[in-house]
Image (tube, rainbow, N blue to C red; front, side, top):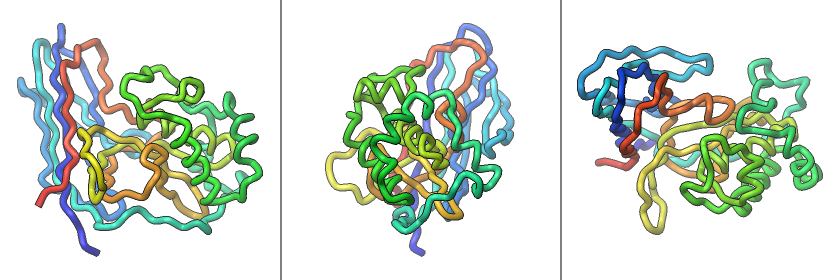
Length: 270
């Protein structure tokens, strides 16, 4: 298969009153045909760091954000397939009793995903639809139509129920809401965080940012769905997976440094 090269990365500038232990989760993952090369990170002033793997299998970096002004940078080149993610409208839903043990977790409520609060809405809208891939796509269609993308419209504490009521959100909110509806119907769904370049997309280019989408267990595997963009895309580069955004925070600080600026890179290169 033909591959294309994507530059991914980010830069965080902080101002901290004291040295602050932190966990950074922005590294590109070698996953499903994605090859990562030329990977490097740095922090100025220089600080040591080490990686570890969390309970979801995500690679994380532990380091100190030093007191004063500091700049963290991460860059990598990802070779991605020149193809959109797989689609199979015949992929079936699996009854809860037959789900793999490690998949059951993704049918339960979590911090931002609240099937217990939106269960009646999910059953009213989607329970009569044919089960399987097309029902999940119908959920994505509804979320895509119902929510309007708007920066600043939600807060770090906004749940799927909050954004459903407001009608506004960012990509993580679209994803939390679609996952909520899936879990309310006992369809396992997990949150995915990563880089998504604008590859072969017509229209005005957007400023690169981190992106969120979801994976849904149908048949015997996970399938990618994107309620925010709601169309198959090329160039997805995974950072991490979890129950919701709380499991794949790009930065966790054990203290309160001020984030002065953040720049994200996700663009194709020759």
